[in-house]
Amino acid sequence: RGVLVLIKSTTLLSQIQVYTFSVLGGVLLLALLTLVPRENGSLPIRAKYPFNTTAGIKHTAAFAIQGTALATAIVAIVFMDALVLCFCLFIIPQLQLLDLNYQHCQLNWPRATFCSSIKDVKNPERSINCFIPFDPAEAYDPNDSFEKRFKICIKHHYRLGKIVDDINLVFGSSMFYQLFASSSMICLTGFQVAL
Image (cartoon, rainbow, N blue to C red; front, top):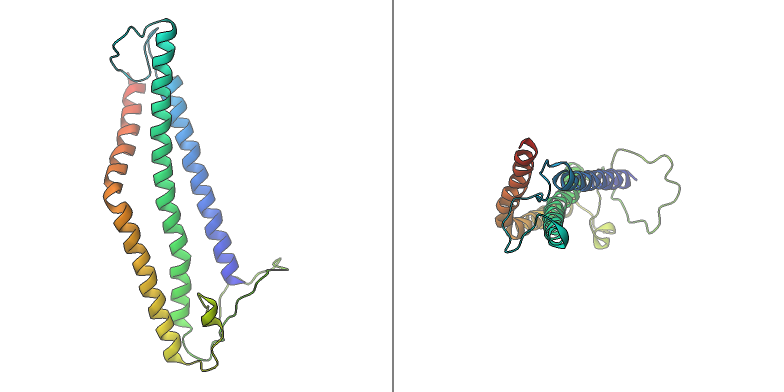
């Protein structure tokens, strides 16, 4: 039940951060489209078009193009930030469980089992005082020993390290561009609001 508390708290934290990113992205988009001071007929982002954008349907079309581009850029930035953050937030409880498993390798700590349904979780235990299996094959071992538990911990330590390496491989090069895009959007918005 302590694992359930850990997972619920991680999920809640992840939801709060994703919703916060979404709200901040929406506020940034609204600030860019409505609060940026501009003269009659000007657009939120200074740009040159091959047609006159100061009035009429051409102004509406140019404004729609810029609004769509801004919305797309902000959604992409928020999605990338939230995705990487969620990966990090869901690796953290696994690392915490692995840390507890290293502490509970001795045989005087019981081995936990899997439960297919969770009922009556009104008062869940907050502490974990057993060796937690990461897959069903680890839950039942008639020849349990310190060495087997320690090898299981090493196996999952390697697995989590590989997951982190894979995430770095996929997102490592793009994170610099993501940071540049986020910083540019924030700075340019502040610059346009100040003008």
